[in-house]
Image 1 (cartoon, helix red, strand yellow):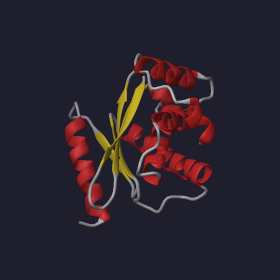
Image 2: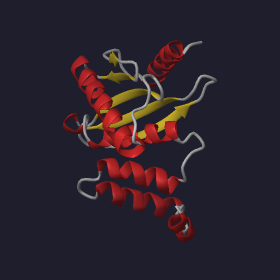
Image 3: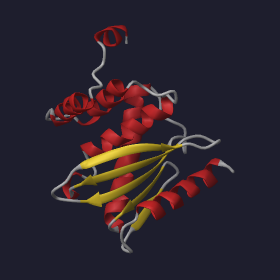
Image 4: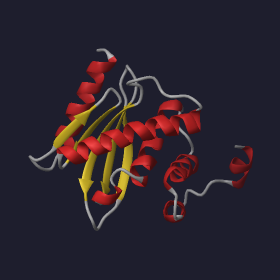
Length: 173
């Protein structure tokens, strides 16, 4: 299978596994497939994801990723009350594909939460051996942290999971 075929399989599986209604719209590019409640939202998220991918890669990696590398399927669920996101990797012999789940308000769907999850996928693509949890979450938080909310969430997560970084690791990084 070529990269294009792998991307199509990732899209099909992710949409089948995550769609909760018949009114799902999909927008696609060589880097992303977005499943959202409407065509308008899917297209807007796709455009924002492409922009974040380019900007964040240049900022954090000093280069853009090649087209199709680190392909992401983004599943959007709109909610005015709940916010959250996750990025998980689907491995294959041809390379990783990422599933980004995003639950946020219509007003924030193309903003900070999306940037956060895109940066998770970028760093996972660039560092396939993985980053320590504190570095992965801390880096992603910097992509969205305009008001300190993400840092507070990260601190709460470290506290809840008891996965605080060791000072020695921080100083040697």
